[in-house]
Length: 141
Image (cartoon, rainbow, N blue to C red; front, side, top):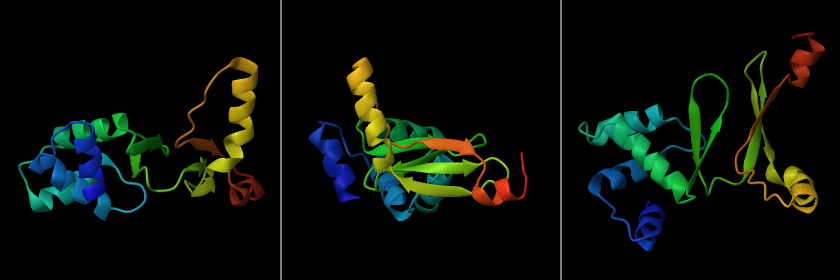
């Protein structure tokens, strides 16, 4: 939690008690989590913190490049602390399985985009949808 508070203060922003509680919940939840997951944790500590406050805090942390977000299918956005190593997701549209893979696979694509188009691709936390090996073998569509 101190690292998030320190990062906030380094930007000249206040570490309010509400933010501190949300930061504590973020660090308690490992891996990927939704705003609702954070809200459920926060409610155990302070039932007066609203879901809107959780969303505003997540937006702030994304703007400060401390949290990433991704869509893993469905209507939910999932978040991860930036110190959760750079990785991406393969999401099976048949069984819903999710497999993580390392970011380095995108390095050649980032280089090619920079060289050919002068474009700096930011591939922080992507999800690629398709069919996993098991579902492909089973003939799923």
